[in-house]
Image (cartoon, rainbow, N blue to C red; front, side, top):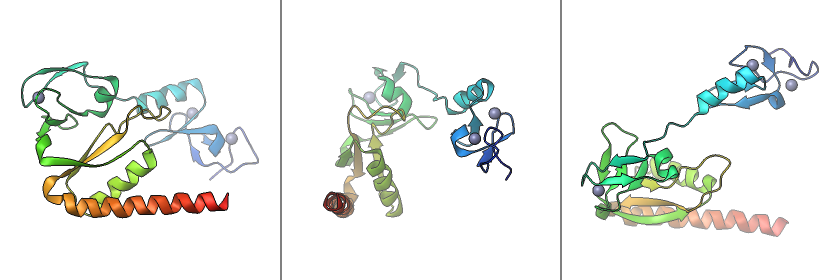
Length: 181
Ligand SMILES: [Zn+2]
Ligand SMILES: [Zn+2]
Ligand SMILES: [Zn+2]
């Protein structure tokens, strides 16, 4: 890789996807798939790449046909509960899915994005049928309310053990950090 066009003494990390010139880490912003430099034209491309598509402010519940008014975070996450029939709705698919809320039990909630991502990968590995409500947040904004994990009732015991171990690990990590401070 060549050197950064702004910093001739630094190795370039990547080329900008917009203008194709090489830049170092501090001169690039990371999009979903590509890097972009700080030039206004390339920043505009970055904004387009990372633009979040929102659901309309009102949708119809596929289960009970109620018209639902959505919060901004629901519109972005596309996953939420119907307050009328209590179904868990997943609008990330077309047509949207409606899961029966009664078939699922809440096993974990967290405001920590790292913990949420970690537990999701653990549950994925364990083939647990789960869904998360409220996990979406804009990168810079902290969560207003915790993301909640729901697990299929048949797997609650299995998932409960996983969550217990997960919590114990988190606690151990925190403790170790506290001791070294
Ligand atoms: Zn550029
Ligand atoms: Zn640079
Ligand atoms: Zn409904």
